[in-house]
Amino acid sequence: MIALGSIAAGLFERSLNHLLQQSPGTAEALLKHTGASVRFDLTLAQFDFRIAADGCFSEAVIDVPDAIIRPTAALAARLPFFGRDALRHADYSGNPALLATLDRVFGQMDWDVEADLAPLVGDIAAHRLHASGRSAMGGLARACSTLARNGSEYLVEEAEWMARGIDVARFNRAVDQLTDDTARLDARLRRLETPDA
Image (cartoon, rainbow, N blue to C red):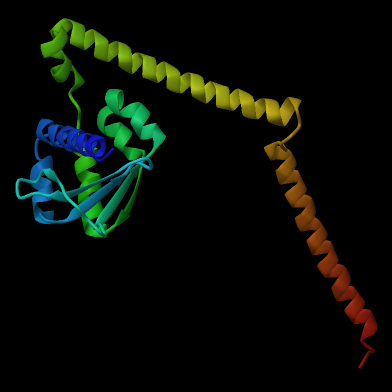
């Protein structure tokens, strides 16, 4: 189990550093945080790194990291095809200056999928595979969005398990009106109870 975790951590480290090397200026931006520690908390596994003297990530044993990054499911699904746009889907906590730099670096990272596929399948096939994958992921995202919209519409309109927005707004206005009316009635009662001076 330890060997498997070590292999996964090594693969994760190589992948991060590969992205840094494909994205000019990103490793240089991390140089001012040399020695700082970063934990990638993937729920099932945690990978701890220090920022090395070359601005890349180096696997390390860390008790309390300077920054914690928790990628979300949306990030994992989008990363291969949407590059740096996918990195918006992560939760960050820790040292604000380090997090600001990491956010900027991750925003500049851009995985050149075609360049990595080209040696394996050729330039044209790499381009087509990347375009097809991107299109498929876009279609999947649209399908999920449509499914969620249709599901919520069903729960509101057909099954009536949820209230429509307009009904909630109408109810809130009625409650506000009732509150105002009650306050006015209370004020009148107080005036009637108080003998004229």
